[in-house]
Length: 156
Image (cartoon, rainbow, N blue to C red; front, top):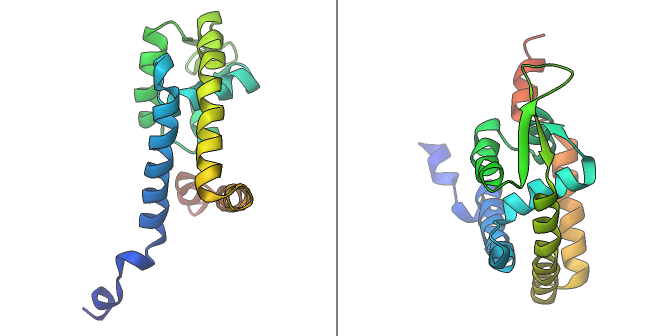
């Protein structure tokens, strides 16, 4: 029971990061909604724009997302013709995601909203602080193996 008495919501890193993420996500969702995207879908299209075709597993790992969550986000993109999902050439069991011309156009259209979201966040939080925050968050992800990776490495 002593441990329960020490638990304070205001000290929880997970809660603080998730609340901040929801707040920031709302800003980006609002700014890219006019082109029919959510911020996560914009990020998926952006990854495919920058990196080219990717397997579902590769994209999920790159975005630090589980496959199920990624799956829920890519289905509407496929339905709208923004991406294609085909068997990978290297391993037919893997699925490869490719950006379509329509997906490229939608991404470019949403980029204007993304720029507005960036400016809105920087103006409310401060440009320097926002840059420092982004660097810290990138460092958090870069320093730690994904939870699934840790469980696999502990078995060997």
